[in-house]
Image (tube, rainbow, N blue to C red; front, side, top):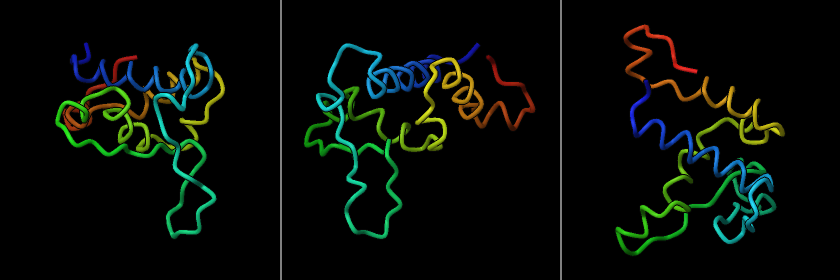
Length: 110
């Protein structure tokens, strides 16, 4: 069984996917700010890359809209842009095996 922290991250990523793909009845701009892909910089900004919001207080850093950005942006672009939720879940499960499981040669839970 996955740890509470791992399960929370999985469900957070699932919720971000639902919001960004329109499966949740909310405006994505309410929660997230996408990085501007049209800016002329050296960074390789993809379509589904989110921008970390500035947080002055420690409390704000733990809000859903802030705590998920780093983990979301670490997912491969192919996973973030997946059109079907079932495919997203499968691909995300492959990417979220913990280092401890890998070191101990344990299989990841499905």
